[in-house]
Length: 383
Image 1 (spheres, one colour):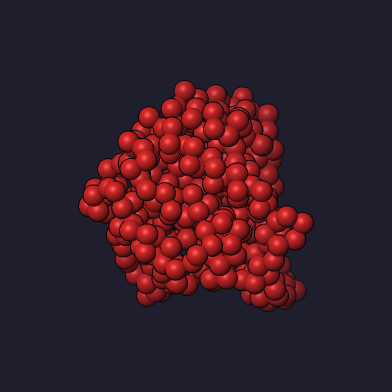
Image 2 (cartoon, one colour):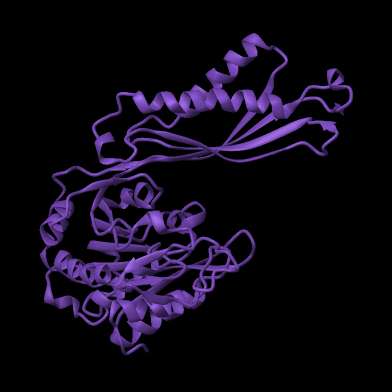
């Protein structure tokens, strides 16, 4: 059982535990257990096996003074346990260092910093100091599609009046988040020897034409009217990105197929089919001029955004405690999924997401310490 419950000390230990999404998260769950269980917390494990056969665990922790089987609470805090893969040459990935007042390492801000703050804030505090009830919830595989959160929803155990989801926001409460979409675009051509290009049709050239049209559409969104939440985001509009592209078989073969992944991050409230429908119209425009253009779209993910009212009691309490204005977050979170089990939801945590998923990932120690105080203040004052 760790004796030093300062958030910095806990975070250093958490970073030393590799927890990439592809790995079993049991070692990290065991660390959480080693902090909470000796202090009387009730832990409920919700295990499942991932697609590769690895054990994964969601876990719900209930304070000592509450019934162990009561999962309907006033306030729940949710934190995912996995990180994205990191470069093998990054020496600090699982060997964290403190430099210039910041802790560097994989997951430092996304999102082990928040996890450390939860443990530091609540492990030693008896829940009977307040009339409110609470739960700490730790999920698996957030980074690869919120898989654990979906399993948690399917289990139908947890209900919360107020829900706080940990992500790095520099402690500013996010009351809105963009949605996320992903599609695989497959453009077909006809293979031929590159010395005789007229005998074939280049799928790569065709894909390039389509991508240029998508880029033009993406640029046009910068000037769209937006909606009531757009001012919370930077940038304040729906964005698109072509992340990967693959095509062709050899340098001297006209390519017969080219595939690319298109992702979009849409403003809250935007209908789910908006981008796929617009994509089909772009393809139809190309087909109208070129009937032999062949392309297929497979939508892989469509996750809506979320939006919490600015009058939300949870949001107002955090602003009161922290003195920081609300924002929107352009990155994906578990809020759209888990918000279904709560009356209101915010996303908040220490660190800046712009350092995450890279060798620059870090979190200020001072923010960790402030976060612990804000979490306690939120719990002790929420109604």
